[in-house]
Image (cartoon, rainbow, N blue to C red):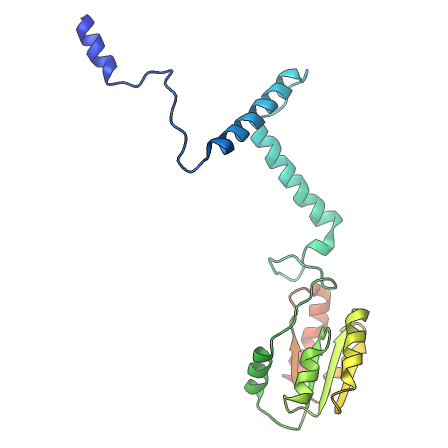
Length: 205
């Protein structure tokens, strides 16, 4: 019987044998994780009323942070259905000239009708539309004053009819009159602005 027991044990892994570390984790990473877990275990042992496991605490902190952002920091979320988070005032980007050309080519070149850019920023697309896009009248609407001022400064060098409006687009339905092309990158605009502007786009489509 002794030899049979020895033979059986030879094919089994001892219960106290240490398993090898995962190949993708460096010893330093494993040591850091082990140290954090040990520290949390010490805190749990020292706490008189007991604490939940570390993983549960981290998930709770993540959930709480998401709730705080959604309720207290609306500028970090979007209400127009986009999964991206951005502030409509501080988030800023400019369309490339190649994209400008593609958009204008889709409607064809003609001296009739005006060009409108909602959220025109520094006015690059507005200036390009009147300088190289073939439009005789171009309008840009921008709510952020610093960007509007930059556009106004640049407008004088073009020499055609360009109007930059510093205000909320909802207050200026007249800019939709006589349009041939209206451009609006509305990713970061709030839902109420989108709902107010959409009918104007439909009316000139």
